[in-house]
Image (cartoon, rainbow over all chains, first blue to last red):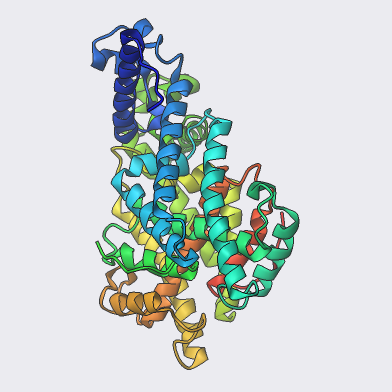
Length: 235
Length: 235
């Protein structure tokens, strides 16, 4: 479309950076992000260490590229799932399904952004921005569901603890970037995240392996508990 | 009590192993378990690599000791929290509070057993046994709560997805080691684990940092949602 034609030099540089990132993802899967070695990647690619450092200045810059690629891809995935005009419950259910598929397709990618932090590494502000964009999709859906229900009644009567959390969130909504959603919608967006992450992260880390039950059904139950009711899809 | 007196040689060996483990925990916190280096520990202790290998044959044996220590400590913590004779809800609430305190006291210890798996490392069967012991404490409490309620009504009416999961779990209870708990108790024990892990794991990984709300209130809400209702304790 509007893309300027790139010089061969620029295109070559992008191609090498992509190749380095592909090796880096393989390393993250094989040895973990904290053991990522630029020199090992250089060796695999048949180039010198200093040559590779012309593409990525250090380990952290390379990890940042992987982290941002992961967040961008997850953000695109959620956005594609939440079809505008669909009822809020349908959008939430589609996002929940898409999230699990995305995680199972590449567990090390999910765990790079939501698993154990890489010691000594801090994700850049852009990652927070991308994560906030995903949260906005959830807040939009929950606010719309609440508005349709007439009151903030979605999800049934709130417990005392939920009411206390709602009171707190009403006054602590910095993370929601001034979203006009009622407090109960803020709470439900947070529990969408934590409940689904709870199941997914244990599944991709292998904790359900050998337990003998179908995690898809547990995930469907937890999706349902946060108002994201869709088809139950067993693996 | 009945412990035989240990020879100085045996005591010295245990003392050195404990010292090695302390260095290993520090490394896990600083660089991650996948970057654990026995040679680096030997250097820190002023002994040779081969000397250290007389105490732990390899990296995996050392990680296994850390993993088992973590599971044993968590198991003891849960057992101490679940006072026999207390009502089931009280025991569940005490376990939920103890679990979060345990995780926040040493995030790298929590993440070693429940975070991103160490590539190439598989936990030993004893870890599964210890985890199953914790699950039994939960199943006991939920089964007792169900029995008290007369029917399996605890936690309010089940959704279609929850009913489908219950039907599945009734026939897939290998992980529950023949526990006589009704299916709904099996489901609630699983969601105790996944919901509380969902909040704790994101908190210890730093995902709530900068969001500006109190995770203790979110945790209390999620504890409440699985019938573990206790005092709301803000940090």
